[in-house]
Structures are given as C-alpha cells and as structure tokens.
Length: 267
Image 1 (cartoon, rainbow, N blue to C red):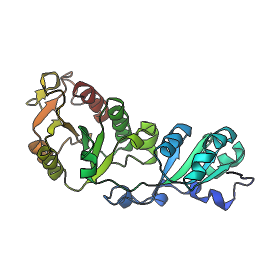
Image 2: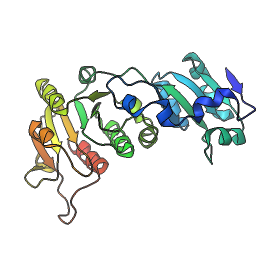
Image 3: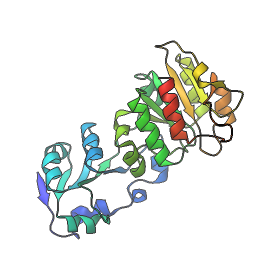
Image 4: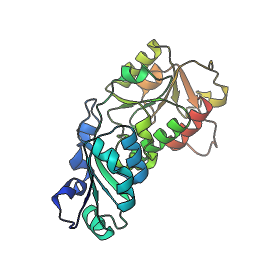
C-alpha cells in the first residue's frame, strides 16, 4: 500500500524529522543490548535493509521507488509514503531529496558466540569511533569474504547513518556483535581455534607478506583507533602482531585503508 502525502507537516512524516540521536541514543548504539531505530538513506541502502528483513517504521519515496518497495515495506509492517520533491525536501531538510529515505527498527543484536558460530574470517574493532571508518571497513570486509564483525563499546555503530551510507548497506550482510572486553573476546577467539592477528605499525611486528596461515584456518584481524592504535592489552592478547610495509616517512595508514590491504592479503 502506498500513501501519498500532500503536506510537509503531515504527522506521518514525523519519524523522518528526528535526528539520529533522537532515534537511538549513543548508549543504545554502543550497547550489547542495542535498541531504537536507524536511518537508511538512498534506494540501495533501503533495498538492502528490506532484503535483510529489517522492520521499517516509515519509508518516504519518490513515485518510482514507492512502486518498487511498497509490497516489501507493507509486508514487514511499515508505511510506504510518497510525495513530490518539494514536500520531501521540506520534510527531510535535505537540499536534494533522496529517492528513498527510511526509518527502521534496529534488529535484535547478536551475541559474540552467535557471530562466531557461522564465521571463519572475523574483524575486531577497538576504539574505532569514526563511523566513516567503520562503514569503509564493513564494505571492504564483506567484499573480500570476511563474515563476522565484533566491535568494542567505544567503536562507532555499523548501523549509524554515516556508516551505512559509506558501507552502502553492506552491514546488513555482515554478522555483528559488541564486546565489553576486547582481551576476553580475543581469548574466546583463540579458544575456538582462531589465529588472532593484531595490525600495528610497530617495527618489531611481522611484515604482512611474511605471514603464513593454513588456507582454511579461522582467523581474526584486530584494528585500533586512528591516533592511539591498539591497546597494549589487545596487542599482548594477539597471536601475531602484523605491520604493513610502507614509506618510513609516514607513521601510519588510515585504518580503513589498512583494513582493506589486510583483508585482501589474509583472506
């Protein structure tokens, strides 16, 4: 069912007027008991959210995307709204309104063990608080065959507006959990047969091209913050410290760039 909106003040548009912090608090986004809602921007992200079974509250579309998504939105219990470009611009505050913009309820969070039950290639993020970096890591990880993500409670939310935009909705295809204690998480991984590889620019670390792993052995890559890198606890809890050989005049790579290189080399 498609509902045509004729006024930008229509109360059915109210969820789309809320900011991200109103839809879900920082505490909710970073909790192991995540709650609230998330924003899907653009037809591609909306399509991937619907394909993943995420429950929509309301999705505002142009005519073409409304016809495309209406059946799925209605089947999942949401409202499919359409309006002309001026109403969509006024209601959303976007100078160039997107062809589809949706507010979805956050899915039930997974536990770490639920992620690890189906994963052999896992990314662990410690203190990566920039959502663009998390989104880029998610996108390259899924594209290169990594199938699990565990973030500590100080890392950005993979379902945040900016992270989803950067990952182009790839987060819906990557099983994800939160960790309250990264060192315990790494011990859990090791106990389940994973080789834990910590990425660091330290000169004493093993150069990436010299790391040798059995082809089918499960593995986990651990990445830290842009400025401080991994904590000493995370470095000490890993099996191998790994560095990417680079120009000695440059101290480090952007974490998303490092993740892309390492995900490819150690996939």
